[in-house]
Image (tube, rainbow, N blue to C red; front, side, top):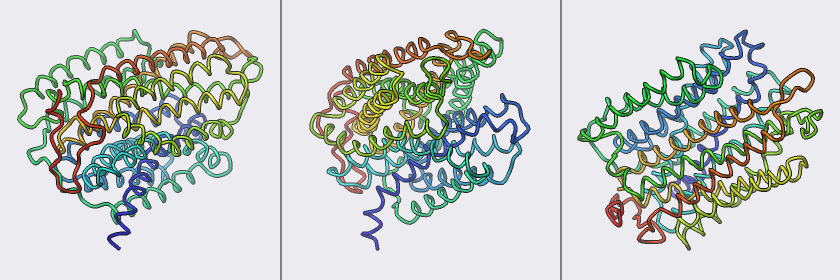
Length: 479
């Protein structure tokens, strides 16, 4: 039985990562209908997405640090439990206030991927670590590609609460499997939890992401948005000073400032931006009315199916990305992935009218994302001590999240300024979509440059022992 649990640990953790991504995307097809279903305004309904984004961004580094200190399996189960509880509350209520609170609980699931990657480093032998980490990283795209068509089908043919009952059942299954199959990692970094650091980071991130996500609605020059940006700068400046003075900081800023850690974090921010532009713009473009001359007028279900090949590609290519990292190093894999993303946007710019070319371009972008996302955690694992892997990967995932939030705001700003009237309603022009593709592709090239600037690692594979808890501190080598 113990041998069976060991064999199933990787697929169980990957299932948890897919669930996390599914939970983040399932609400998207519901957004146009929720004002009528809940009796709330469209602006209030939008908080069902914003609340998950904010709580996920705040909790990812916090839970990562807690996992390093108190046990990664314990914190992983807590994150999956909060995700499942949030889904259950969504299934039981139509009150918009409770729905927003429940979606905030689901944001805790964002910590599942960095915690799982840290567990894999501690538990697996070196020859299995690379492929397992690559698969774990790819679950973000796989779950997003699966969640959208699944949710659209349920919304179209069943009561909307059924969707949340289904995700509750899946969450309970994932929680049970993780409790049964995942061992507690012995690698820890004991000490007192940095509560002031956690509160300071939370306040700064809330101000930043709230301003970025609501700028288009409230107005970028409005007093509320400007006040949030100013508060963000002041709070994070104080937080930075506090972290440098703390004996056991939430984020080791001295370690994070080293090129082998800082540059992967920058690359994660840029890759998150470039990745998110693909799904965000594609879904809007193919649903545009045919009267625009470029739109295909597809339904939500058909739109989700257009993105599905990209998710399947990410699943199939994750072992390939691991082999490239083993042979050439994750730095090369990251540079290759971001270059492929940029090439995918070249395809999108060349032709965004034919459905097969749209799917091809989106799938190429997904391919590049597979390589890039699989390389990022491997770079972090090589650059930080074993006792800080969960918190460091949590920061890396946070940077991806911030990149996605900035991409959403940037794409919205571009499309708002490039519209035409179709049937009396403003609709983005094809030129606006092409500008958005060009912007995302340019960011991907900058990410490629950042990847090539990362100092080479001392070895091609992480030198990690099975459950020894004593890998070499490569964070001190070549920094």
